[in-house]
Image (cartoon, rainbow, N blue to C red; front, side, top):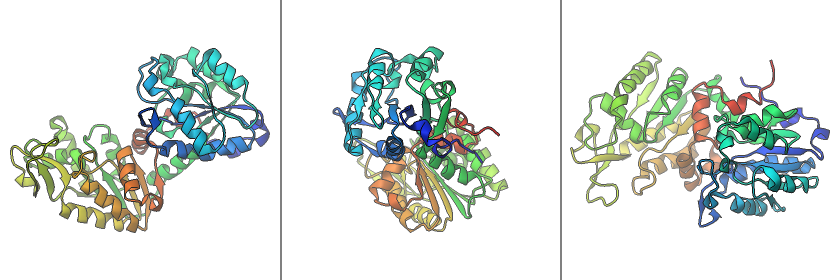
Length: 399
């Protein structure tokens, strides 16, 4: 079990008056210069408030989008600073850059308990490259490092790893610690029956997670585009459906491994198919062996939804990552939404990961009934694949 250095391990006197560089994950959707979804900002609030209460000078750093090492005004974190001010109900200063004179000036003017947000870290190519010079510039703004960006923990970037290696004191924030505890519990003697739901478009990116989870799972439910590849591996012709032809052998291997591990695999029993995603003229529900040559599978059907909901409700531990259909195009979000609704009746410990899955659970109004909503889609999959995440490794206690 991963043992992290947490805020509880730091002497309170270490924080008072100290410049604390806190790596957060404010990679939020921006629409019309406004924050469209505040969930990631809200997830960081407990740690920020704790540092403010300890009278630290809080310096927040985050990336947003993919500006490719260049300044992109559309991806500025200024709107995030404004939204954070509103949520924190306290002033938040904004630095026009993440390093250099603009950042140094704002940080130098912070009083004890003050908060500032640096501009998008990825406006500098040195962030993704973990460039030593860029990491040194960031570290020069800090006395203490707090890692609370689990969503970026699988990236060995300057602000995730480089700064932590260059300051004397470091610790995991409350969000990071909670993520590791919840997700780690899925790998370390989870209560049974343990049910996993994996969806999304492709198998790629989930293969190692599947392989690592299979021996632990009692039941595996597969939906979304990736289920098509498994259905194809069982001999079904799925017309124009998304199928990863180069992963059919991989799907067969996973199904064989599941059988060897005595893990029950539930594939869609019926599929919602259509002739066109953008302007459908025909939508029907058919069995996997009855998909027409000009049709494509875009959601799981009603029989499958009932079977998936029943499996979820009987779970003592549940992990779900990935939508079960073309979630972004109603009415092909019905399968995902139905299973999300069903989570409210699951008495076990539930963990949800992945942006679209989280959105479905929130839309269904059952997010408060979920044991843990992970802020990191890719990071959670890599952790569950048994990989050592750079942003976690740098915060681990020495054995």
